Structures are given as C-alpha cells and as structure tokens.
Image (tube, rainbow, N blue to C red):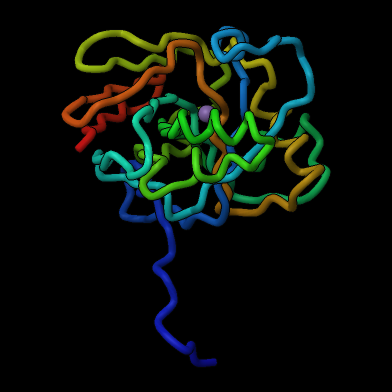
Length: 227
Ligand code: MN
C-alpha cells in the first residue's frame, strides 16, 4: 500500500529508564473527578456518572514547553494523573482493570477556559477548549513494575514557586479501575490509550513566562515553561 502523501508521525511518550517509546492510540479525559474541583467549577460533586472527552494523540507534548495558544485570554492548568494502557477491551470489569495498565505519568490538561465556558453555555462540544495544539504537556511513562499502582498520594501544582493545586489521588470520585470499566462500556479500549484522570481543586490561569512544577507522589515531577 502506498500513501497519497506521508502520514503524520505516530504520537509517542518516552518511557522512564528505557530507550523505548510508548505509542499513543487515543487520549481520554475525565471531567470533574475531584469533589473540591467540581465545587470550584460550580457543580454538585455528588457521585453522578462520570463523563469523558478526548484530546488528540498529537496534543501530547513531552519536552517541557507549552506555547500559549491562539484565541484565548484564559488558558488554565489542570494537573492530572495519566494512566497508560498496555491492553484494552470492552466491558472491562473494574476488578481486572488494573491488569490493563502499562504505567503512570504526570500530565497537564491545559484548557482554554473562556472557549470551554462559551461552549458549555451554548451546549456545544468542548473541543476548541480542550483539544488544541500542545494542550497535554506530559512527563515520561513510569512502568507499573517500577512504581506499582497509584491509588493514593499527593498531587500538586506550583506556579512560579507558589502552591496552586493540592489534593490526593485517593480523593478521586471515580477510581482508576472504575474509570476504565465505565469508559470501556462506551469505547473499545486498546493498548496505547491514555486516560487523564481529572484534576484537584485550585485550577488557574497561566501567562507567558510562567513555570509550572507538577508533582505526583511516586512519579518524576513534570516541569513546564509557558512560552
Ligand atoms: Mn481535566
């Protein structure tokens, strides 16, 4: 088979302590998965069913640089635990979901909040607010063999040395196995899928020149410069 023109490069994320790259298939994100963040966005954090949206695989960027995007005056950070799958399926039971996980990493779900807010008001899709160039800065993938499964531990974001976001993975409304199970009822999950698992309270806007220091206990920190 020949292509009419060269296909886009495969999106990849480096694997910690390895020369191998993780080949990305899809990027799923869960909304409002920490109660305090749901409240700060004006929603009831009751355990209503989770909802998901997607970013494009090539929105992932692993070199620590976030170029301030076009068309927004309110671009915000959301630090999140990223889950990387080594296998998938449909209707995955939550008691076997952890077996599908290749590893974990730190990621940012950068958001054009003004565009997202306008879309919400009009009942339109969130894509322009969420799925734009370089909107998912991320650190390396750490294998489960090296870091275990992350069910609790501090998750924080410092902006220019000031603590802005602070929470604990154990505060997720829907656990990682529950998220995988529910997601697999709507989509066929497969090796290469990445799930951003929601952000704790304290989201805020960035400016060019900012440095963001993102930490999840047990994983290497992610440092990002806004340019
Ligand atoms: Mn998010």
